Image 1: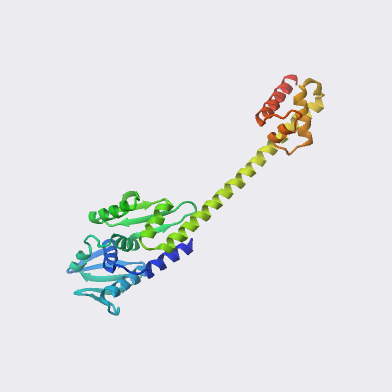
Image 2: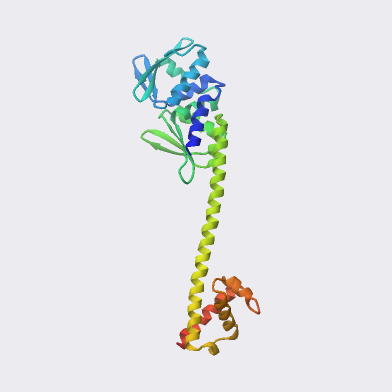
Length: 287
């Protein structure tokens, strides 16, 4: 599944920013923040997110990124820290970005890039988003997902709301709405392949199980026939049962349904099973 993960983050980085301000607001709303006096420090451990933020800043300012991005009178200052990238912005700027988004799905794309993840275990699919405690952030998330007809499972963990989408249709819808169309198509393709593979495995397993059952039943029936032979009981059993026993000896690997059709007067599988039970009971009484 590495192919999907790579495609997803590559597409997030390269997607055209139709509303850079809304998307940047999404990142700012969910990334960890620490206030120092008049400044707000936000940081991320995802390099692709740091690069995306730089692209959004370029789109808004039209200036070359050089560690300090001017957005009108607002500024983002980059500070590279071991293991993560940190931005310092004026506290007022941070608060201005926390307002409700202009274009909702662009905002959602930024928020998901900052706190979301896609998991593809051996069985199933799920998209997770871990939101900060802010109540207004949850309201925006609920509103956006509701507009797409998606009802996620929500739980609270360490003060954060964890949203979970477990059905592949819902995940594909979210990816498409965020503009990650290539990733959504790749996920759909993977889902189809998984489904076909699962059906094929079930068929193979079912066939193998049926073969084992047939051979086990045939072995037990051959033992009954050997008992009839060794005890000389052919004259003690009904003619139709004797015919069935001789057919089994001639066709040791045939299924019960096939044996029933081989009889001079064909019968169903259930009738064949009934006759074998009667034969077993009869032999038990005689012996």
